[in-house]
Image 1 (spheres, helix red, strand yellow):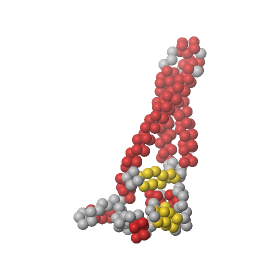
Image 2 (cartoon, helix red, strand yellow):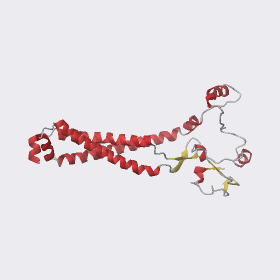
Image 3 (cartoon, helix red, strand yellow):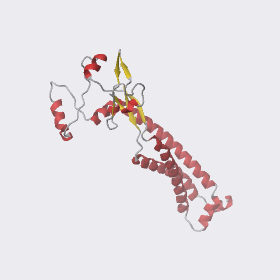
Length: 242
């Protein structure tokens, strides 16, 4: 039995195909789903058949079971781990895969933070350059607003709002570009067991909102100095340059 996710990514995983392990071939008799969990990255078979073929010598790494009442997990964990004859550790599915993928998660998290910082710096300087150009090309408009009685703070605030709006538009476009990757299945290596783990990308509403908030923050950071320049520009200079 082959998990649904890896059946779509690897050859010879269709029903009826034959997969070779060591010196023996096995026929794929079906696919199974597990609600999108990591089990769909596995190939299942009868232990009495697969173990000799893989030369495992009746050595089991883990046993998976479902409890009738999950509320009794803590009690069962204490009972099993307190028995010196067993020498076993009991973990929930989430805890097990978290520990197995800790190294991979740290690498991905580091790369994500590193890339985010680089892109954030680029976005800030891009917004700053755009708003400086906007301030430089609107000296007459700035002078007109000051003559009409608008305070320098209001003028600076208007440029800040413009910067945030432009950044939100850019963030919205980025969110729309990210939507097509929702549900795409890919895989990576679990360095703890050197096995393949397939997973699907999920573009959640929370991720989209976080992206828009991040874009707005970049707009504020990039528009702050140009807004200060617009607010502090003398009226006489604005009229002369305009």
